Image (cartoon, rainbow, N blue to C red; front, side, top):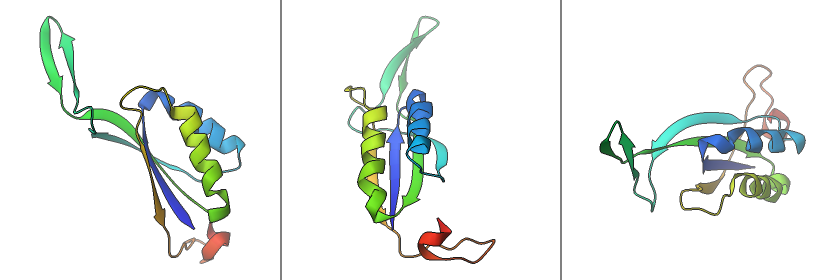
Length: 112
């Protein structure tokens, strides 16, 4: 099993979520996060004053899937969240050793 952590632009969340649902990905965790990558923040003007925004608001999506569905999930996230501009985000793929559903104590693929 693999865990996908994707950092995307906030306005792309609904599009990514709907595409993942349509493809059969049932579970998903979403967190509002702030950070920066190569863009190192940006400047905004508010009421005539310029402000440096060092930590840019983003959305972090986490989902665990079987390895056979990994490329599909990655493809969906890329195709639905890509704008072609700096700051589109990143995808991280991690190995998951075990998954256990607390309610039924099922483990492995059946716990997803």
